[in-house]
Structures are given as C-alpha cells and as structure tokens.
Length: 88
Image (cartoon, rainbow, N blue to C red):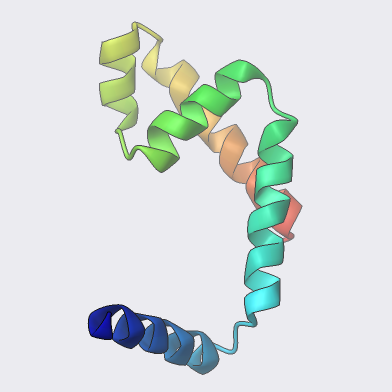
C-alpha cells in the first residue's frame, strides 16, 4: 500500500509539474474512446493490436497475412484521427 501511495503521489507531482489537469487528461481519454467507437471493425482491431498490445506492424502483418503497407496506412490514419480529435 505504501508503494501504491508513493506512485500515486509521484504521478500527481508529475501532472502538476507538467501543468496537466486531471479533468483535461480524462476528457481527452474519453474523447479518444468515443472516437474509436465510431471506427470500422478493421481499424479497431489494428488499434488494439498495435497500440494496446504493443505488437509491431511487421509482426501483425506476418501473423495475420495482411499486407504490411495496408497496416501502415491504417496506423497512419488512426494517428491522424486521434490527433484531429485532440486538436494537436
């Protein structure tokens, strides 16, 4: 418990140092989740494999048989959609 509290405190300190408000952070997360819900199934699957499970595009291509450049274009599209949603 002591370690968890220390980690929580250091996260809070980091957020304060970076001038990031928790509301803004969680609002952004919610906006990303809402955006993902509007995507086609293929885009959601690529997002899950690449960004959440941490697989490489080459690994996904070899395991699924999907062309590497198709995955590359989808990842690029996903990044652009998220950036646009967050207005970065």
